[in-house]
Length: 504
Image (cartoon, rainbow, N blue to C red; front, side, top):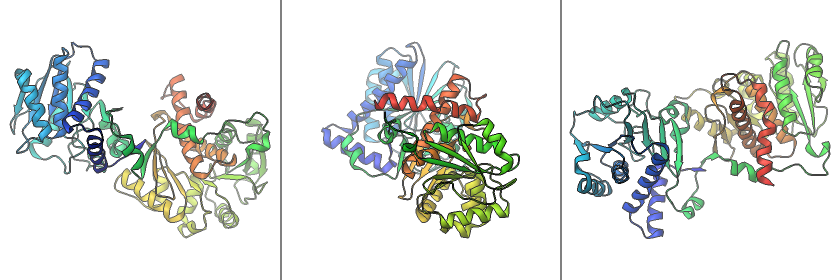
């Protein structure tokens, strides 16, 4: 799914209105109807609803929704904050419609007025400000939003929680409605995908309102979400008469005394990815552990208690380097010598990234198309900090273009930054995956996919999707609280099976 800016969404609205020869008021009615249907499917008709409206088009959506709720028997009412000199034309039209039919269920709040002491069973709908908000709420309006957040009632935000801009993140002290659900129209907004603000959105539901697919298909955007449909187009199911040589060779380089578990998890994921042959290139102290715990993988010694040499057993193999690697100077020297000679993309994670952070002058020797998989702290050690996670993603995008690499910035919605400047947000995964070893599994998975001939871009996108999906399946079978990294490996088969069944 493309992620459009607020300006592009307005252009899409205008294009749809012109293409279908409808009015903007009719498009607003579509949006309100979509919200009404969602509420009708979730809440019984006896549910009391309070719709808090502004004077712009988001408020117009709320006024139209109130009318629809009342028409279908819900005990609903609307309050409108008089925060501006005049209503938008469509909001004014819906105010008149609501007043003409249900005047007693409509109240205008003047500056300084608040809603207080409402019953706990009332559903509160936020329709104060939409994506057109161009500055943080101030004064009475900001206080009103904070008052809404203080009440314990269940809350639904229409399109976007009021106070949250679509294209950037607000200051930490800005007033933003904290919703339990957000009913967003057609497109997820970029700000809804970042850790600082995602909690304010609650659970996001994307509602279609019939915006023009012609506009969507023809309009470029640098940000998208990774959806199952995207992965299906890349996925290549197993061939009936293939052999192990068909599916490439993956080598996991890492491990040091006491850190063999990281290599083991990466090996397991590489094997579960479908790679034909998988080898551990690790210190001799890990031979018995790895050969016993993972007999399907081969072992090549790369030192005694830490990696001191990196010589792939096959030049055609794809290397994933970093799990449990350590940062010994001899390890760093071996890594840089290998990268200088390497002519094909590799996957770099964990201590491989930490070694680069200690020697940033070596970033220029990375082979084109490499995949770097840092979490936030690893990224900041490597490239520096940013004020918020969206700015961090933008910094990662700039570095991906500068060094011609792919950066998988792990987080709430992992972002995959491409050398082309594209930014893809992953929509699978859950909090249970915030556990030791989860990143090692991702490293092995991406490495195994690249070994099978998927491009770096395809492997990064497929890897984060499958990693998150396997985590979701594992959490569903057990719980997020009890999930461990090995569970992700165990459910990769089920995640692949979903793709296979759809593809076939």
